[in-house]
Amino acid sequence: MSTLDHEQVLIRTGPRSGLPVIVAVHSSKLGQAVGGCRLWRYADWRDGLTDALRLSAAMTAKCAVAGLANGGGKTVVAIPPGAELDAAMRRALLDDVADTIASLDGAYATGPDVGTTPEDMAVIGERTPHVFCKPIQHGGSGDSSPATASGTLAALRAVSQRLHGTRALTGVRLSLVGLGSVGLRLARLLAEEGADLLVSDIDHAKQAASEELGATWASPEQALTSDVDILVPAALGGILTEDVVPRLRCAAIAGPANNQLATPTVADLLHRRGIVWVPDYVVSAGGVIHALTMELHHQPPDDARERVEAIEHTVAGLLDTAEHQQVTPAQAATELARLRLNASPSNSRPASS
Ligand SMILES: NC(=O)c1ccc[n+]([C@@H]2O[C@H](COP(=O)([O-])OP(=O)(O)OC[C@H]3O[C@@H](n4cnc5c(N)ncnc54)[C@H](O)[C@@H]3O)[C@@H](O)[C@H]2O)c1
Image (cartoon, rainbow, N blue to C red; front, side):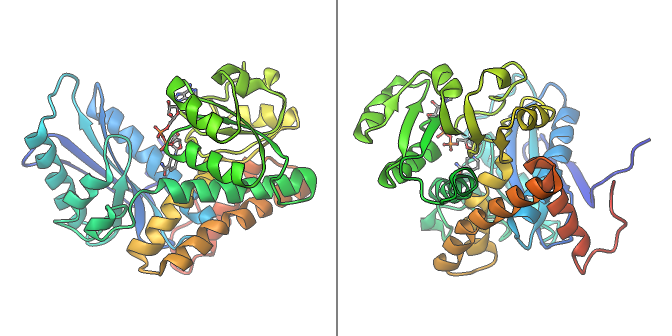
């Protein structure tokens, strides 16, 4: 039988909403556990529990590699199929979430995730201070997309340094898949820097923005498999499948889209093809670094910006380690997280395997 790898998991039926509220605290070895609040439909609430356990562990690795003094946690509200979520019900479940988080006495703080918004964080913030990514007018750090885009740019500089020996992105050929909140901001930063941009989105309305930037517009399939230096996934997850890998013609992949690999083995396939893949959770950490630095660690915006830009050094370090130790950058990141967690002074538990 496997053991519970988490410090605590709180499951309760929300007294107002009647819905299952699950908070998983994976680790607080490095500091307060953090992770978004997911509102999602599940056939069975236990599927929501599985998500909370998995996603909270992933947050521990994300924070550790980002050098944050935080651990990993996650909230999942499992909405049964067919349940209606009107405004009153939504308010009820956010109050239930807030009280559940408050009962953990600061062990965990939440933020937005799939199904929740910064405005929802302001509602949760009425009942507990352990919340981040609130809108600016509610005393929060606001939209996380600009910091996520800046952090991705920093990661791309490190990749460029590895490929071409220079961190400048001028003339570097990049293919960006997804021109949403993060992708469009990133495309602007890259265009300002003189990068050679190919961009795509399933939403054709984004083509006008592409023309303004002087980028070449392509279909998502063309963008994915085009001959470029760096492929930048900035849309949805699962884009890198076993079938896609043989058709890729890029030297490296680094982008903010979450869960890019369809399966973990794709990282090895990419490595075998000589394509450098930087783990998405490292590249996309800018938003959470910015929000936590300002809202939970109460540091000034300049400090937050510096920490986001430090993603360049993190990625450079991972690429160096991967090369010297003949491992994938994904394995180097996992090892870095393990070392940081085990080096923590508050480390009182045996290392998990
Ligand atoms: N917003 C943040 O701060 C943040 C932080 C960490 C990670 N991320 C991740 O980055 C990615 C982008 O986030 P966002 O906030 O910009 O989302 P968004 O919804 O604003 O943008 C996504 C864009 O991708 C496009 N798209 C969807 N499917 C596509 C496909 N198959 N091919 C091409 N384009 C497609 C959409 O039309 C949209 O324009 C997501 O995976 C998100 O989880 C975002």
